[in-house]
Image (cartoon, rainbow, N blue to C red):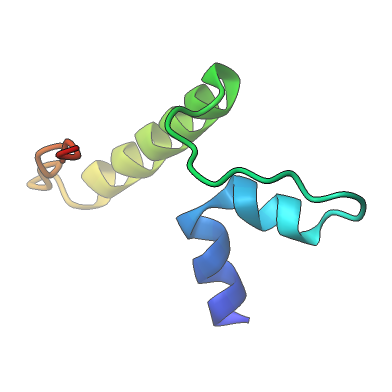
Length: 69
């Protein structure tokens, strides 16, 4: 069960596609997320960050990591 949760957190889109019946969609490299999906994930992280800051007022978000391509 823990592994299932971890895999879903890593890439929710791929996880859901792997569990859905029918022809799988091949996405070898997903460079950019769908804007609506990206907004949902950003909102989720904003809620989580707000909850952490509420519980720990000294919390500071880590610097964003930009991929070096």
